Amino acid sequence: MKKVIIDLLGADNGPEELLSGVVKAAEKFPSLGFILVGDESAARAFLKKEGVSAPSFEFIRATDFISNHEPAMAIFKGRDECSTAKALDALKCDEDVIGLLSAGNTGALMVGSIFRLGLKDGLKAPALSTMLPNVKGGMTTLVDCGANVNIDAANLVDFAKLGSEFVKRMFDLKDPRVALLNVGREEGKGSPLYVQAYGLLKTAGENGEIHFIGNAEGYDIITGYADVVVCDGFAGNIVLKLTEAVGKTALSIVESKVDPKTQDKLKDLFVFNERGGATFLGTKKPVIKMHGCANADTVVACTGQLLKVSG
Image (cartoon, rainbow, N blue to C red; front, side, top):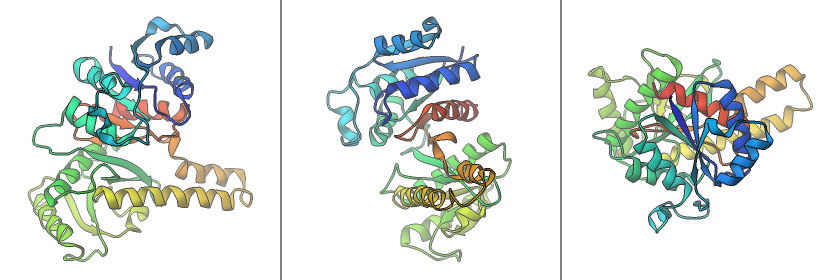
């Protein structure tokens, strides 16, 4: 049986909200097994209260977790018993486990994924990807959206290849269009890093490794100009947070002025918790970072996402 590991600790809404999602996910994906990392007695008590058979789940006991106020490197400082470390160790060792979901500290999860789980051959760093809605009714995948702030041009090429492969699996696209986020579409724009990356990406495109279409400006993410937009984690995180803020602001402005059907369409675009999570690309097994304020629907969406990207 394929299994999914869920780290129950570190989420803003607490473990019970994630456990509610686990119950829903188990109903929607009955062929999956679930390994729950956290307070075992509390998890068993919650499942019993919900009338769920506990023997259908496995448990890994953990009471320690890395909070969002701690640095990423905290995972190395005698924290082998924290939920992130235990979840990653189980992910690496259990052949039946296809991936991990966590709403905990993003930096610790990334560092732990590199050193406790490992990366695919030839990669130096994983990339964090997220899916943003575009006006064509589809999704544009942004890579990297916050994992790597200091990178080189070769990293951006790796991110492009990883993003292209992710989109092929996630959306069943045969030839995803890949663009480099920049301050203009013209070749030669941007910092020396981005000029160099453009050249490498162009060569990768000519070699048939990716379908590179050139530079993309910020608004191109929303227009659906490309299926994958590549950038460093600094720029990507700003794009992601700004998009979330604009979405929430737009919803609050129009909520009382439009009909319920239009409200539902807007929520489909900007309610990120119900769409899934950010996937670490390049790790030996899939790791999905759920939003810190993940709810039950997030767990269900991310479980479905994990099934797609795990192949």
